[in-house]
Length: 308
Image 1 (cartoon, rainbow, N blue to C red):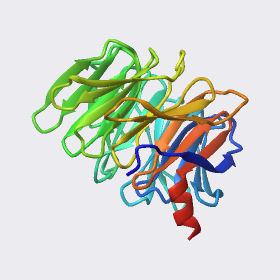
Image 2: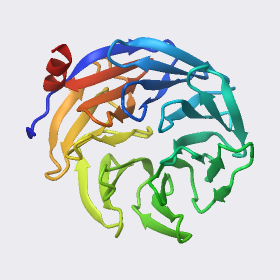
Image 3: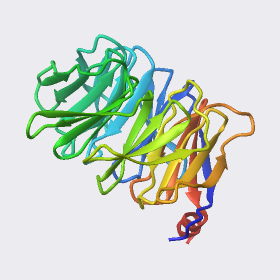
């Protein structure tokens, strides 16, 4: 794998849904989703830029979306304080879940997509059994002292980041909470594919790599500007490179081990905050959101392979 990766824009998509609040891949990266300030979610083919489906039903801006393990359902979070569980094929909302006292910031599925986990501005994390008709959460965690900015899960743990500067690990098997204090407001959280490390995007213009088991700080990554925005970060499929958006219209790619900037990706010369991003689960490919557009970036090698 070359140490230097040259990412180029392979597709720019005008989402036509006001400001794009979040961009996400589905489980295998064959589709992507955009969340808009127009209260809708759109499903796209990232290679052709074709709009496949629009999902409308929220009463306020959509902040996050996640696809199920078989890509037949999606779950979305909104500032209208609700979570909606959608049927991908029909575009119909299967279930609307309300229990948060404030806007919902983030949402994810567990590994077999039987539980949806949401985090909100009410400082609460809620777990929802979406396969039953139960409309109230099966569990509520209220340990955070500020807004929940990201939730992640693996087979036995839930990870949550908050603006209170902590990453919380909820071990579901033994019912234990571990709290790692970073000391800076955390705007996003990502996990390496090998589940050994967590990457926390912080509001002091730094990314911090944390050890999942000990909570120790492994490395820091700097170069980008986050200002007061909720800037997302990600880890590329090979676990060797990190990426973050920036408040100045560009994105940065770092080498995970050496912590040096490999590429500054200029998304736009007109500025605009590059606040949301998604890394492809298998390929060297990324999505970025800026204003009303979604950008697909691939390495030169990836573009050549697709042309063949």
